[in-house]
Length: 381
Ligand code: HEM
Image (cartoon, rainbow, N blue to C red; front, side, top):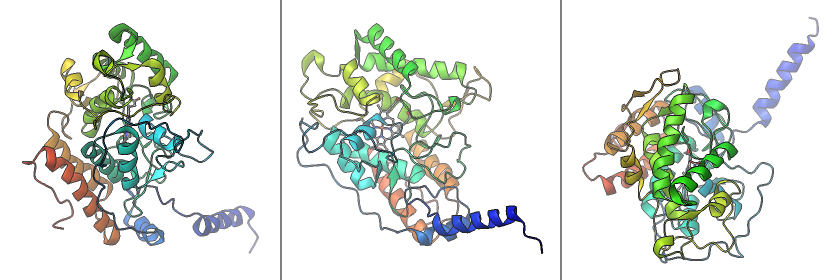
């Protein structure tokens, strides 16, 4: 037989990949085939997900830009993503500086570093873990490699995290571009200039609920007019409004009172959104909070869940995954369509951990919507 250098090279490559390339412990398993799961899951350090932490004992304003949490620029390999809150916490060491953390670490960090309320923190973290995290190792990357295209349910992520498009991350972000334009997670100067412009026009130089209402609506109109793949369904319909309120409640220094409350100055805003850094000497909010005001932002210019049809300006209403006006439908479809689409027939430790995390997520739904029944996509637990 003649020596074929190409075949030898390919064979050597395959050998190297199978023996030296470990599956990243934070990479999501959603969308992998049964065969891939059979190979990968036994190589992972499986954990039993612990119950989420409760609220801290002290929940007042407090210096968080302190000497125990110095800002450091991310090092090569450290992961950062679309969330300015989590990026800031990682760059100050409230989260592991490499940007990979457990749900427990994230809940504790957002509570300690921002006074994010316990319910909101649990709801965000378990929904994110279910679609973007590794439920076997109990790890989530706040950035990760971006998968820019995708159907719903998305195709396998392989190396993912919060950058994954159309899971938690979505279109119409205030300071990040739509995935269709190539970068859905980095600070976008053009969008920042627009953020400043709206804050000057509608908030006298501050970002507040009025600015949030106008800018949120404008970003939606912009995406409808420019992004043929614009999509805002289910979870994204809820988060698009909630995220516009977060800076008003959590990026404003907790010592501000009276007419300064709820008014975010633009230098501080830029510090969070662009530099992933607390403004110097920043105090966290004076009381636990999060997305308060999302309803006001929505009601200022109500837009139904929907999407473009493959061309610009082709918006169609699509409430198949629920939305802000029907959170129980959102929950039910999130579990039965989105999560089950990613994990159609899990077994063993994967099934166990999905059930546990789905239970943690349902607890957050039940506390606000007691009449919304729990759904069990894989049968009784
Ligand atoms: C509790 C866990 C959290 C998770 C899992 C999470 C996740 C995310 C994700 C995936 C996005 C991108 C969505 C998108 O715009 O496409 C995002 C955006 C955002 N997050 Fe977080 N986040 C968390 C906590 C926080 C906290 C504590 C804050 C503020 C203190 C925050 C502030 C924001 C803001 C303002 C945006 C919108 C960015 C923009 O539109 O440009 N988040 N978050």
